[in-house]
Amino acid sequence: MTQEDKINWLKENEPILWANTFKIAKGELSDKQTMFCCCGKLATGLHEDNCRKFLQQVKNETAKRLQEYIK
Image (tube, rainbow, N blue to C red):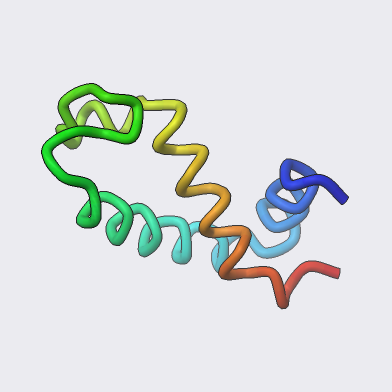
């Protein structure tokens, strides 16, 4: 099962758990960043909401935290 398959499975089968964990992971990863995003641009809230690299990191972290729920 690929990482995208795991993410899709979690979104379909555990949507509330996914959303809550995603929100927590996004906040934690956002706080860990310095003034610049992982893509090199200025890390503002608006940028983080639209940055593909940052959101992919958040998705991967969320899937990692919810690994035990994947069947």
